Length: 162
Image (cartoon, rainbow, N blue to C red):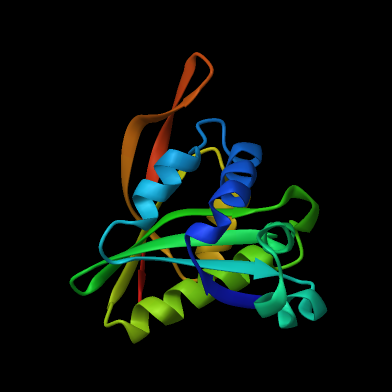
């Protein structure tokens, strides 16, 4: 499994993966805007090491096919925030999300962050379980933050000390 820094070259694949992962997905324009913000970094993952080793010679289409998951993180002073994390449905349950989160935390720590925050839908039990296994604790709730059709779901704010 390879975790590498990436950027705008992955926007089309990120948009497709985000749409497959979230009801309120971010499109290419939103992802481009987010990646251009100060303090933002993106890490991408593929468990296909042989292909990742040959990335430098790959075409844009080849790079797109390597994207099995990604995480976008924003730094602000000594804090970092996970803006989004997505893993291809066919790659879930294999530790890829955990590896992405660990890599984002390590990179944020290297950039001087002392804490890492995120928000997660309160009904996303697999994600909450992952974050708790990584050491995140719930620090607040935002009622009615996410839409699920006609329903509104609370967002759980979580924090990890780095």
